[in-house]
Image (cartoon, rainbow, N blue to C red; front, side):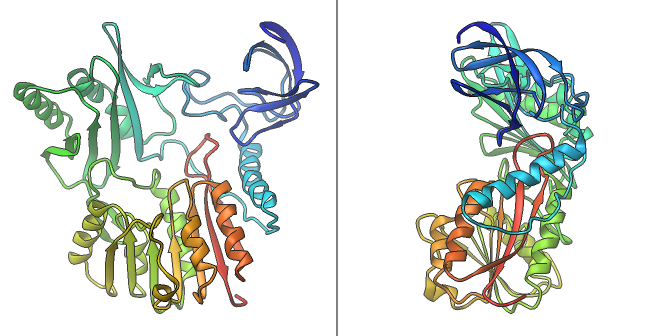
Length: 414
């Protein structure tokens, strides 16, 4: 049916956050709807536009953001907290079930509004207008963001200053990326894919950063000014991450993950932390055991090493620059460790999991932001003789379909 108004009943909410209605022609995906709702929609090819909610679900609530519905950042603000948390946990249960893994999944560790410390914004010029914010849903267009209930308040307050920076650096064609990180020293601003600027414009950027009180400002990887070190604390170890590098988006979620990882490795004598980044887990774990940190990003490891050298009370920490996707640690190399922690990108750690499955490592802690690839990797480990005895979902990305998990496996009875 094309370009016609249709009444549908939503069967369930899919893993991307859209309501799904079952029809004779197949499933129809309707954004911003909930299970059990009767809705009027207009279908235009593969796209569906919600016109009206004829019978709302009791789980429906008022969205917290004025941009909800057009901004592509959040898709579940309309779902009340109890149903939302149950839905997120169920996504982990479903991903495991699809791989034939039956396990008790812990309750979701919740997230709170205004706690996201890291944001990646986009700037785009449209004619004479400059838009700074997030991409619209299913679009390359950018909507101006004046408020964001998930972001830390200091980032929201900085939006006018970020717009001033973008006015100088946003290219005429294409987009500018603004990575903003709230640190112990203030906001760290990394601009990427910028237009070529003049020395005078560079000085203007520096002046704007000083006026705004930003801790650091960088342009395409080059630091323009540092007023204070933009440091993060990993169990009391101060680490200054490279500009724009990966960090956990929420300090609260990071602490929850770190607590689970630390509990799981209790009693370990030598730990390998794979995909270690700048030391999120490695430096915390080094409070109790020697750690070997392996990471493909040389600059992230350099930040880890710098923090380690200026810290006290740590067990030995060694580092290795290595692409674990192409060159996972071998079975022989794994003999040096009784415990392995890995926290890969969304693609997961399939190659490393396949080697671990043949190893004698006693305990494995898998951290993941993608339940589907996590379930795939867990299946490999379980087939290799490991037992999954705990998995905990963590809501690092409030009101989005994304879910963090910490899974603990052992070859021995816990």
